[in-house]
Image (cartoon, rainbow, N blue to C red):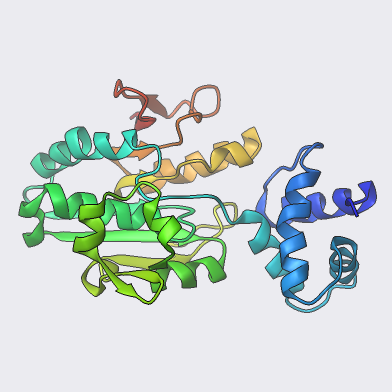
Amino acid sequence: MPITTADFDYVRTQLRQRSAIVLEPGKEYLVESRIGALARSLGMDSVSSLVRELRRRKPGLMEKFVEAMTTSETSFFRDVRPFDTLRTEIVPQLIERRGPTRTLDIWSAACSSGQEPYTIAMTLREHFPELTAWTIRILATDLSTEILAQAKEGSYSQIEVNRGLPSKLVGKYFERHGTRWVVSDELRKQVDYRPMNLVAAWPEMRPLDIVFIRNVLSSFDVDTNRQILDNVKRVLRPDGFLLLGAAETTLGVHDGFERLPFERSGVFRPLS
């Protein structure tokens, strides 16, 4: 049974209040898909049953609902171009600039099930052997504690591994466990996973050299994006790099960044 207008209005209001994600009319199918799966997993017979329990404020259910609605699609080497630019432009520049400290701090925001931070770690290992003597810190955050647990585990299906991951990297950085492929301990230790809500107060963060916050801003309204970019500018080093999704921009949202002329890579740097 399709979600009712009243139920859709209720869940979109709750989602916006708790995560700032804006669900426009016409996205009923997304709600039906996401919370329909949640309802089935909880033994409920319909979306309306789950919404009814949300309205009754069943303990813990609202958190599960928000997590179900905010988990995003991802894959290894998603969109390819940003990781090419990371390899050919960004990291070489930072190696030159950070030579005295030999330290790089990288953040993968809204990391979902971990493919992006593991892709970053593999890119650094494959192309920059000199960095083995450096301190490389990769922070990965997401609103969903459930999806972060999956990311920490680093266990992926054959389908997930097939999406964007070259076979030579599978053999080098993954181990076969039954029907699953598990990230090597060595690679997993490079990533620090922490829960974080981008639209809540940000915790203290060390100055960052690279921020990946891709395919996230498109979920929010302009005011929320401006707030997020304000915070990014605060934690990003003046000569650092911000990577957004291919369809995202700071133009018309925040005047504290400029786009760099790297083809279709969505790379920005802060303006002084």
